[in-house]
Image (cartoon, rainbow, N blue to C red):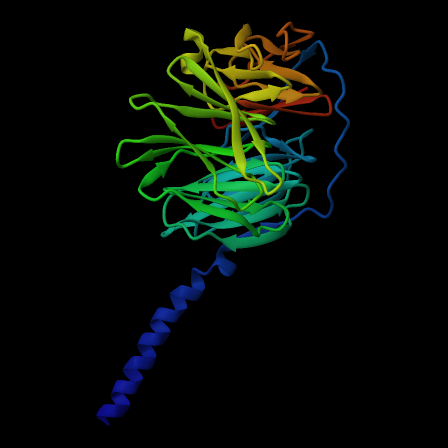
Length: 374
């Protein structure tokens, strides 16, 4: 009788544990709403002389909000694709048992990173047009993490490691760990995936890894006592700011994908001191944003070419730099900074908003809002 009673207690305990586990499983707490099809991306037309606010929706991100034919909005535990013309939600992916850590948009895919109690581990690739899940995987991390992306690759930075995955299928491209160091959020581009490693022995290092090849990165020691930040990893240049000094590193890759530094030069200008990691490049021009001003830097001559007021970071569209200002939007060549189009608006874009163009619309995401102008 005692043995039978013990058996009953064990079974009851198993049931009591199993029910909540199933109830809180990923499958039962994930809600996926997909669109039947993905509408074609409208051709980008000329900006009109004046635009008005068409619609507004909540969002938690401040990056360029358009991928493919969708405007992408985020919440504490969800990602959604909106119709850019109307703001109507076309699809959504929502996790009931996890929070959203970060998103990045690349080649028709929304890459979203979620965390439960054990860090930002759950990575999913969603079709930007329909919201259908393309792939799903976990990352071997136990901390918070950030996401960045370059052509064909998304990079998660968590603590002392970077993990690069293919945006098309979610498979690992490479993993790299900086033992004894803490990594800044990576910046990804065609030239390299670049970050600053801040190490326990006081050393500060610039790390430049191939976006695609599983090779040891190039590591450059940086002067102690500064607070260097990677601003851009462009086609051939990695830009690092420390104080008011911008250092540009020319990079190349050998046939096996190993990164080498070919040259380095500096630009010193007090206006650069407040620049943020939201730069764009066009040819030899790097356009930075300081929080109030867009600045064009010629990386070949290492000089500041122009400056213009801007309420948010620059975006590249149709070969022009798109800027938001207090009275509207403007587009200008990166090399000269001279406006070729000025667009008045009835409501200024949110401060610090990332910009995208789609059709004849401008979309801005920042300050908790996603706003369409047209």
